[in-house]
Structure formats: structure tokens, C-alpha cells
Length: 240
Image 1 (cartoon, rainbow, N blue to C red):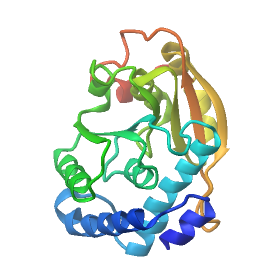
Image 2 (cartoon, rainbow, N blue to C red; image 1 turned 30 degrees about the vertical axis):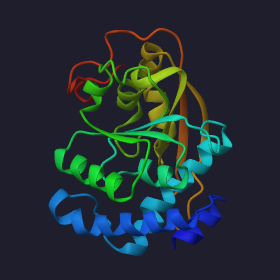
Image 3 (tube, one colour; image 1 turned 90 degrees about the horizontal axis):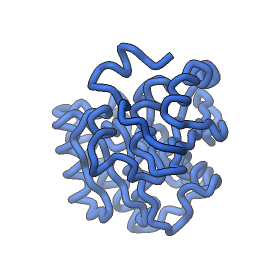
């Protein structure tokens, strides 16, 4: 299943990556009951949905020149949960410098275990809410690319993610059928945070799956110290 997904999006998976994906899958099964990692438990579906969708996103970001093969770009996965899409992207592209940002402590312990057992260099796990991460001097304005999968609607996600980006850094947000509506709803947040939607690219998924697109948002200009607002406010009162 994994080989087919990787081949379909033209991402090469070598022998070491195969070993790491197999161990990752085993750890997901071991930890799921105690950490509430994923509603998808069938191994084939994990490979198709979680691993495959993550590799599809990597393929899009490579095609856009945002994560070139073999280059050490700084990538943050915001609200990563069980490590998707960041960990599969790192397994396939070990040159990445990956930061996994997750608020749930048990999931962070799982992520640390995965990084240790898979001997993944260039990965750190940060336990933090998205609003707090965006104000952390060690994280704010430090990343080339931020990815976030099913974390929040775009108006909220812009406030969460853009403060993490360097000048001209890019947020890559996979979205489903409401992508155009979310883009329109995010206009005020984009103005406030210095964001510009560059493109909407199809996510190359298995044809049997519901279609998704990747919204690419570039940040430029000075960062407003007011954002992100304190914990809870972005979701309670999205910028309008």
C-alpha cells in the first residue's frame, strides 16, 4: 500500500524509510489506546490516508519549490497529533528540520518515542498550544514552511500559523470542499497578519478519496505584536 502511494506521487522511499514507516505503524498500534492518536486503525488505511496524504503534500511542496529534495528547510507541523503530516514527510525527506507542535502531553510523549525509536535526526517536539507557540521567541518567525492538517478553519489557522513563519515563509493548508469559502472568510485575517494566498493546488490523492486542495499562503512584512491573541480568542472571535 505504501509503495503504491509513494509511487503515485513520485516520492522515492528507500529501504531505511521503509523500515521507519513499518516501525511507525507498529508504534501507532501500540500507543493508540492510551494516547487517542487516530480514529483510523486499519493498517492499510493508515498507510493510505495518513502516510499517503502526507507524502502527497510533500510532493506538492516539492513541485512548488518550497521543500526542494535534499535541502534542510525548517518545517513546523502545527497541531500535529500523531505526527501527520510532518513525520512521514521527514521519513521521506531526512534533510528537513522538523518541529512538531502539539498541545496534548500524551501525544507529545508518543511523538518523542517515535523520534527516538526511528532514530530521526532533525526533529523536535514542542508541547504548546498554537497561540502560545506563535508568541514563543524560540519559534516565532523561524520557519520556512508551516503545515497544518485539519487543525482549524483558515481564518483561525492564519492567526495561528503566520506568526511562526519567516519573512516570505509559506503556510501550506490542505482543505476540502469549503476551501474557497474559507479563503473568502480569511480576508481580514490575511490583511492583519501580512498573508497573501499564492495558489490553490490539487492534493494528488487516490481517486477514491474526497478531493482536497492545498492553499499556499505567504507571509511578508512586519509581524504585528498583537497576534496571535491569547489562548481561545482566535477560535471564539475569528478576525473579520
